[in-house]
Image (cartoon, rainbow, N blue to C red; front, side, top):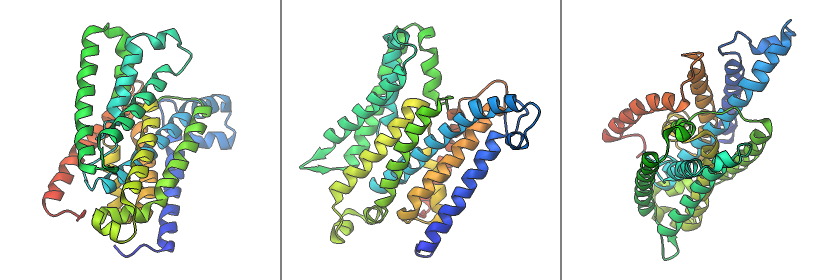
Length: 338
């Protein structure tokens, strides 16, 4: 892969942005009803029905999928660089487990039933994910340094403990009360209002832009701490800022869409194969690729067995499992990550 130039950077982002726009148009035109996006522009006779279907049902879901995919893709690229582990993804640190436990606890004790009009489950999920990030930073720090390998190990252990507590809750709480949150745990894109989507968009764009600006430092961190320090990178501060930003961006989307697996693992590797390992391009490319992938996956989830919908987490898991095995075999053979 040739060195990254400004021209290649902006041409790549332009092409991905064009692909994103095309994907939005295609996904908005596919569904269990026959209405397409072109009908809105052609002023079709049943334009009110088409507008209701596309603008009030499909488009919010498509935009929510794009936000979730962008956050997971960019976060995965950052975690793989900071932790120097090609199999790392946003969930390995326990963020999804913390969010799931928060949602389960809020539902099990009946908080959602007390205030059905408020996003109690989402707020509890975000608090659970945020508490996990705080605990992770506290437990994996020593001498003012954030240690990557203890962070990975503690994240895996926290996920295991969270799963055990969730299973315990399932054992002692009425199953019907937990039905909704169990579907959420598989990962599914909800139809949200444009107000929430706009708020999340601001958070996602700001977070991903900040992560993209750390691309040079991430490149040096990927080469090793000693090399990064010798070239002027403040390793501890860079690791703290990038992991915190990536975790909070992930927590925000998980609290709404649930823990959608494998996107943060697959997308950065796919983007790296096409656009190269330079994180100045890889982070924004992973965000746009993740948005495109999850929009397509969610469109498949709501159409392949229509009118029955499949949780999008099922689609990403069916793609991610074989991809993980392929990646494992590829790493065993020398791998492009070295």
